[in-house]
Length: 364
Image 1 (cartoon, rainbow, N blue to C red):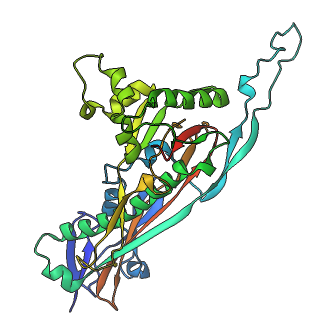
Image 2 (cartoon, one colour; image 1 turned 180 degrees about the vertical axis):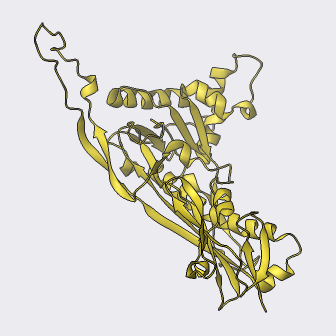
Image 3 (tube, rainbow, N blue to C red; image 1 turned 135 degrees about the vertical axis):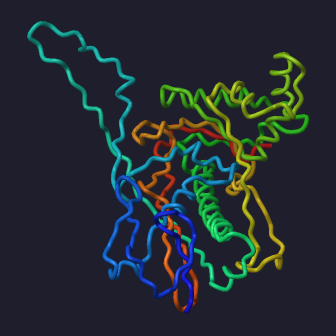
């Protein structure tokens, strides 16, 4: 009789059991507004044959492991309970100084109408699965958790990389910005012995943001190509070389750049993707790798107004994400003798205020 590979709901460990053996208790993990909860059914319940939400794997995939991903630092994730909806949008009434604030005795308090529109919310589902066949599991030399976790992390990394790609496209596509907020950097002369001054160029971007939004951008971003030009630029190094001990290009860090640009944080897009590899073929094809943040065009750098995560604060963009997402579900597939693990994540990166960002593209 075959053995079923499953996770014990009481211990959280991977164990084996006879395929047709019915335990005294049958558990199913279900999603609720408060997270993944354990629910007990009768021993002969048909629900035992359904896929279950694995709470351990769900916890494992909550955080992405690739330290090079920066998209969530630019388009702040916002947890929502529905797949569609609307967020209120506010106009520029806050900049208008009213002339009727003074109130006489017996006069009504003046009121303003604040909401001027809305931002649509729509989530997409991204899903990917992996299977572990009985023979593969039996021949595996290590602990079952090693094989399972390794495969699940590959699945989550792929979806995380695609999420980063969507965020990068959102932040580096000129059409996503208001008129005059996306500027060609071909003539900025940042590289080589050029006479360009990147810090002054960023001051120009901040001036655009302040005039349109009443506040400065609080996060700067660079694609890898733009960062190499910036940190080796002579004008940049001349600004910092008298700040203490001599500073070399290797000491031009993202933290130092944030100080120069007067933003809370500077992030650098180092994540890359590969193409040209046949799915499931190990070592058989040569792959070509490229930087995700240079995928629309090369050498991008800019400043954004980043929201705090409430989704209502004016910001260049947010990443809408469904509450209790992502989730890993598992079930046994008799036809292929595999334990299947399906990963699903509901999210959508969206530009919410095109005047809240400005960037240079094709810097040279």
